[in-house]
Length: 401
Image 1 (cartoon, one colour):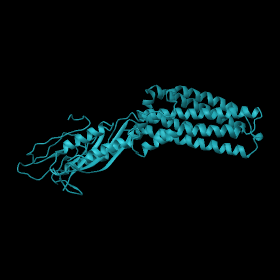
Image 2 (cartoon, rainbow, N blue to C red; image 1 turned 90 degrees about the vertical axis):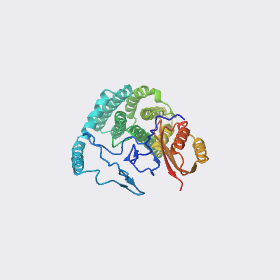
Image 3 (cartoon, rainbow, N blue to C red; image 1 turned 45 degrees about the vertical axis):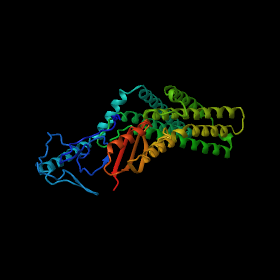
Image 4 (spheres, rainbow, N blue to C red; image 1 turned 45 degrees about the horizontal axis):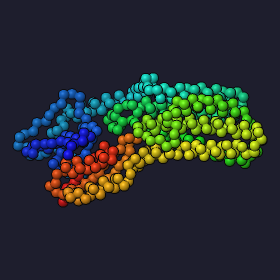
């Protein structure tokens, strides 16, 4: 069977007194775990590596492992190593003080040299900030609370769009020692935040429609029509910028697809809201009763139905639900095939989740018969799940006693 590149296999000499493992350096031969790490578990110093000396007659493994701990021989770390580690820790602590400023500057550099979608979103944010500032100034100068309230609503929306832009820039950073999976999940978090805001907008429109139904509509002032028209023009420009993502149910192949979709739904919901206010004002001028209640109610339902699929998809990824693109029947079939294998006695702890759209992670624990070839079973398990699109898989095996 051909070995897959996403798995790393290691071999050792049969007579070697010091069996080794790629993750922990050295380990006992009784450790049957088959795990694949993205980075070494030990961080080596930047100076020239030093290999410890072992006597030829040594039979004690470099790391002796028991059930609950790993015992490291005292001769492995010298005083010089400990002193160097303390100094390195102090240096890293001092460097962390500037990491926040460096990260912000790095994000601004990425925004300046970003792709077309990032530049378009930056234009959208700039137009919304300019418009909300002008609306707030006019509202404060004329004493109209409606304009001030709408300006604060636009300002809050600009903050969410800014977070989406930040997520687009920060997700380009490579994985490091702290975020070993990278920063791409920021795109999912940004999409979830936008979806949550739009659900709150839908609820507030429903409350506003109920308030308009209770009180007399003749007392309403219609000066917000000019503000709604200007806001509609700005949002229609944003809809045109992200027109490729203007769909309710969108198949997300990459994490940025989910973030772009959330931005498109954000500006589309604001456009529907502005159009509803314009339509309600026009109906009121024609003498239609309960026009504002009807228009705001329809807008509230439309926004809710528009954003609910995105809310479920982004929330499911953050809650590490089973990947929706892989059916439970297919996972159950793989489970049954593994259980029916002649060398496997027990299967448990099968967990599969979607890290970001397009990247499925999984882990499974197997108990195999004694003196069986673990590698052959692991290759067989990996080939089953690889056909389902699960490429990042960790298989742990233990011997049946």
